[in-house]
Length: 321
Image (cartoon, one colour):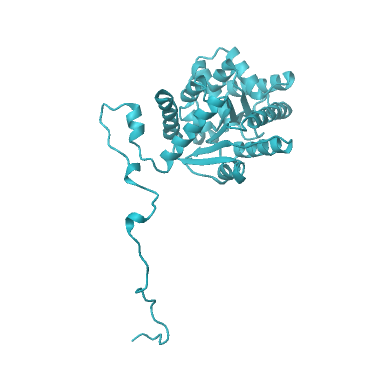
């Protein structure tokens, strides 16, 4: 006998049920993964993936990128330094040649790592091993190149990315073929650089000039805003590996474009990262596309896996069509 005299467990006799097959469901066996043989093609592999969650998103993003290319609308890649450090520059360069990269927006770490790869074929120093002695970030060539380019950009009234690509190519680097800066400059694809003074190793080089860095980066902010303006009607913006700087910059570009009275609608945004942080989700995926202005996607995973999958889907989709 329960001590709760006037309370009894709710009866289940009147619960309504329905036939299982009559219920709409979000997952069906048609969406499941399929085994594939050792001699399968890349297209067979991609088709074998489950049409669920991240795979579904990658397929939809690729379709929207193909549409953007057909419409002549910008496909802009916002990149963090991790993209370069995980060896993905050759894939991005190949996609640039195929018309799937019409603009690159980079934070300061991209400039450092891409320049070092171009110059000597290696990057990403061991911070723990050098910080104690104060040697972290003290490579002369890196700081010299980035700061001289900033001064040149301010003098010539061009963007930082353009001036740095020009300077890097002029130095005849050993590995220009895998440098994003060099490839973009050669292809005349806008490369905008967005630095927050004090965040990058080049900012404590003896040649550092805050005014030049600010002027050059501000020009690139306005150049990126023009690319964002042109995205209306089918363009795409991808944020890949920047958790703070580029999401903030992109949001300000969006508001600047709309503040000036330009329409910005029917565009796609996506965030690729191994964790989904607040700013990319809010400033790239959700806020700019809210109210039916566009569609935002989030793909969680390591860049060295998700970006090759996106590239494969783009190229195999190209071949299929």
